[in-house]
Image (cartoon, rainbow, N blue to C red; front, side, top):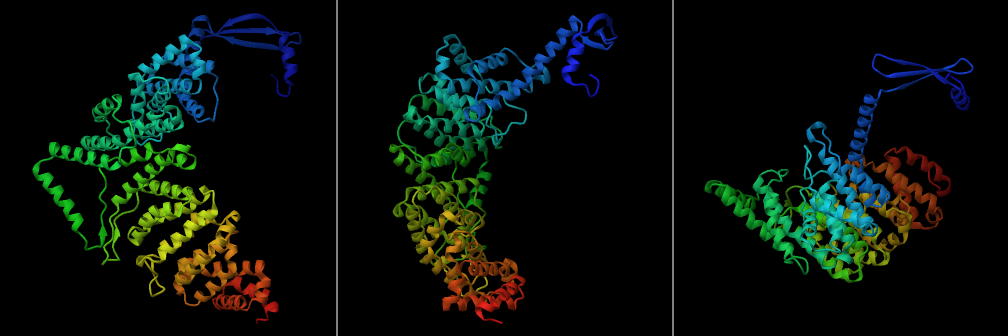
Length: 619
């Protein structure tokens, strides 16, 4: 089409063309040309029949390759409620993939096709079960295909892959859905192999699907939870025997015995205690060591363990980790956050059992400090599973809205003090960042929080030191009041003004004890700048003024206290000017802090002094 010609004009012009010349180029492509009434020429190309067939086959092959790559991803979006796919269209796509096999790349891409077939079938079983039942022949084909489908590993497979669209995962979810209507062995095996999958994501999504269907599954849901509990011990043993975390060659042997017990209904009833899984894991590991290690090696390992327990010259405490796979536990109980937020009326006891078991599991690994040595600390930092458990505990304590229930969890954590600073900080940060938004009763949340602060004030390890230089509990004290970066981001919201107001007495006691430390003073000032923190502006100015002059120069520089304190004064003047003018105590504190800041030549403070000098009569 000539440049600038409107499309409709071009179409009408070319429509008048008549083909009167047929040429064959060197490639065998047919070239047809025609002359229009106005002398313009249209040339079109067409493959010969045998080449047209090859081109069409290539296009079909490419479409199927793209379908094999993309259907699994779309199936995940459909299962997650983020997309929709009509069952008729989906069924046609599944059958196309089932009747085709990619012959290129030596079959190295076969796992994509299998995953897409599994994903499509999972969608039909989970989202379109009624429609499938109305088409008997199609239902028979789908269930038969599901029964015979086997996951295919990719070349770069890893158990830790962030993969939510693998065949193993889809088959596990489909098996769980079919458990509602069938207890045939192949259905049980699909659900079981999803829960004990090679990929940890398979365990996560299979148990999540079981959680979503727990009302329909009844006792079957509890059985799968118990499968996960024992699988944590067996998978740990399989990893020790293979010697490499990503080597899953030993998993099938450990699955066999567990599946036999699952099929025969051995896992019915309440949750199996995690301590039982720990005992099983320890026995399996000892058996593997006896079989694979020489006597000398076993003696060396035993001596090493005893030495690590007795070694206290560096005041380090060493954790005794359980002989279970903690990632299996974390993924298997991945539904717990949702259950805390919205559980069924008859699930309260089971929910508390889950949280208590996980909490006790973590606490058993954390060594307790000796009474005569307040300077010891636990070696290392918290694992991801540790932080995950602390988050679930904080959510449960906040949602339970009971001081008595919360004490069961937070008191043992606070008792650890600076010895386990990372774990304590994780809990306290989760208490604000997760527990506060989850709490439906801010009055109840405040009661628990006040009790928590009061208890910490009675613990020797939580007391401030005599100097203002450094204290082991300084960081914990900041987190206790929700004054971390994450905590302030939540607590500083305007909707929590009443909560902060109800905590004013606790903040007052805390500030009197801890503002002599630069980091605590800095975080407190940072919080006073927020919408909810402004509730404490008047008392905050008084307390900062009392501590500012004694803060070391190093702390002023390290925490940028000059800018923070000046901003607090500016806000106090903006929102509480009348109080500053009338309240003698507040006025005196305001001017004293302003004088300290001006003496340090803080530009913003000098500007503020000029602004208030005429009103307050200062020079």
